[in-house]
Length: 302
Ligand SMILES: Cc1ncc(COP(=O)(O)O)c(C=O)c1O
Image 1 (cartoon, rainbow, N blue to C red):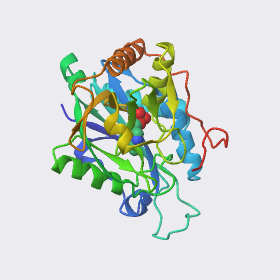
Image 2: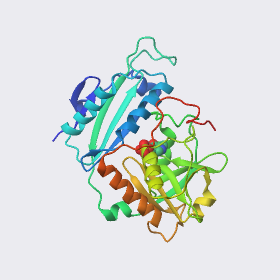
Image 3: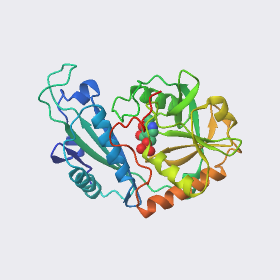
């Protein structure tokens, strides 16, 4: 069966789908994206993704090309046409096509692309198996709370992780604190049993999985502290894990070659993984929502 992609109003065979060479996404990375996870036939965290999409567009003054209802129709159509039971839907909106000039064009209309990809359902053993992370300096720009398609530092970090046999690279800011992974949020459980993740400022992407896992943790009575943590603290942590829409809750059992805990998934990570899978199987949205536009109270600048 051929893969099908949506490009600005039409569905194409994936290989035939194309974008104009003066699309500002292609020339300036002037655009944003979202990745919706699909888990056993269910679309995960729709409300959160739509809210973050609205947030990213509004921060970059890009007009949303269509209503949420119309966007969701295309997302579901991509799932249907590609027969996705498990996998993801990738959605990208760029500022549009215009003669190359840095300033915003007067006339461009935003371009929407939606693609889908199937992945196999992971076994319990695969879901619970630990991964290694390496650490690298965070060399990204100061607005990584926007889900921009400008991802070169993330690409270089992930490549280095791959070349060194790791799954992910955690980035470290200029003050020695871990920000997040190249495509995941970073968490630890300290020696005192506190669940720690960096607060959602302009220094991290506020993951939709992160928000849902916070709900799961609260319901389970686990104490969450949103604060930065250092590499030293992470290496001494009882447990560590990453979260993302397609990764769910994934135990980290090695950081820069140092074993974390006993080298297997920790008790709290397991509780959060099981809780998160139940949560997405129910198909509900997280209570913990992403802001739709900048609210100084919610997005703190560092
Ligand atoms: C840099 C970064 N942080 C965190 C995440 C996790 O976000 P989410 O849980 O919404 O997938 C992603 C996902 O792509 C990401 O690219």
